[in-house]
Amino acid sequence: MYIRTVLGPIAPEDLGITLGHEHLLIDLRGLWDNPPPERAHLIEQEPTLENLGELIRNPYDSRLNLLIDDPELTVAELRRYRDAGGQALIDMTTVGIKPDPQRLCAIAQATDVHVVAGCGYYRQPLLTETLHDRSTEEIADDLLLWLNEGMYGTTIRAGLMGELGTSSPIYPFEERQLRAAAHVQRITGASINVHPLTWGYEHLRILAILEEEGADLSRVAISHCDELVEPAWHERIAERGAVLSFDTFGSEAYFDRSFAQEPRDTDRIQCVLRLLEKGYGSQLTLAHDICTRTQFHRYGGWGWDHLLRNIVPRLRHAGVSQEELDTIFIETPRRLLTLQGD
Image 1: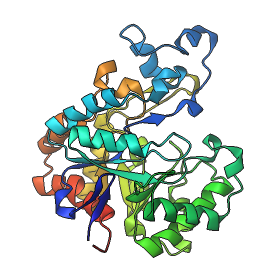
Image 2: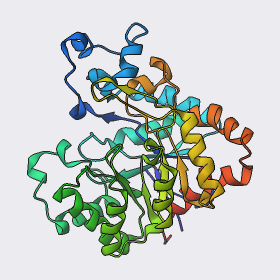
Image 3: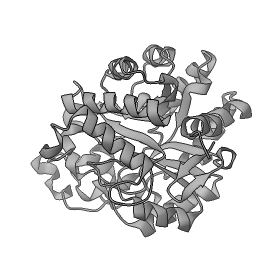
């Protein structure tokens, strides 16, 4: 048994403390939301102390805020995570948001952090139209290639499938990808991570599609579950056997045009405690899903060390045991990432 990192296989026991959903490099400019005239000055601005408040309220108004493409900055930020005790993370950057396996290798080498890369396609609206009609069989062939031979023209192999993008409602391409992933899981044993649309309610539909194709739901993680502060809904997902990825810790943005806002970390902690109380502690992973510059320390954010430095102490104070923390940060990621073979 082994875990496949971008630098090669490691023993499962060597993985250590792991963040379940991150992006070391990413281009989210396809989600840029043309701001109203009173905020048009933000479009080509980098985050600064002067505009940080505006960008926390509206992170998608700045195109530059949606682009993380400086490996040196990523290395500096990731070293803070390593210095806080972090040992590994899963990079979920897939086709549509500019994956770069070769630079992931360089970042892993520079930081001594285990990086496991996911593979697949992001949401249909961010893909070129030539991909929209790709068949289930063709998508399955892509996933098998990226897992078995190398991702995106390299020899660097993925360690899982994900994040596989879905929308609300789910586009036909996205459904075909889910069915393809279930087929590939049966062949390879690789786990699956799915991105549901934030604040959507497609989670159970996603699991139903995967189950129809024979997927092992205990090796499926649903991302961004903590964007909905709805404990009863969380329990319905957990009852299906899937892993809930609470992966937006540190993100507390507002979205003025839609009058929406992300949960506070305090809300997320309460949802974690509820799932632990209900006996679902082995179906949880935590992370930050860093995908904008304002989430970095350099630009006023909390960085990749936020969970270990700030949230874990609060969980301990609330009565979470070391055994429960080890399950969340070590054992469940290890289980999801472990592959059979030499």
